Image 1 (cartoon, helix red, strand yellow):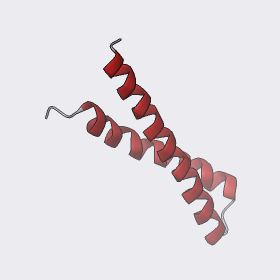
Image 2 (spheres, one colour):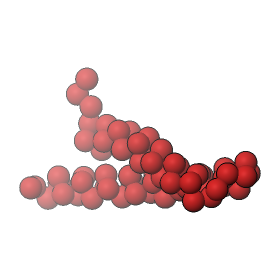
Image 3 (cartoon, helix red, strand yellow):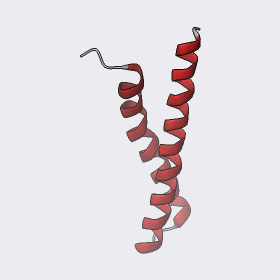
Amino acid sequence: MRLATKRRVRLFVRVVLIGTLLGIAYGGLTGLVFNIPIFLRSLVGSIAGAVIAAPIAAMEIFGCSA
């Protein structure tokens, strides 16, 4: 793998990880507000954060040819 590709993959993983962590925080806060178990909302938030962050990061970092 070329050096530039490794750098892009590392950036992609970081962006997805940050999106997941933000999703966990947001899910936990909504759990507090709406009296839903915090762990459950944090789990849902982590999945949502990763699902939202991954395709956006992939298109921005690796380019979209469409």
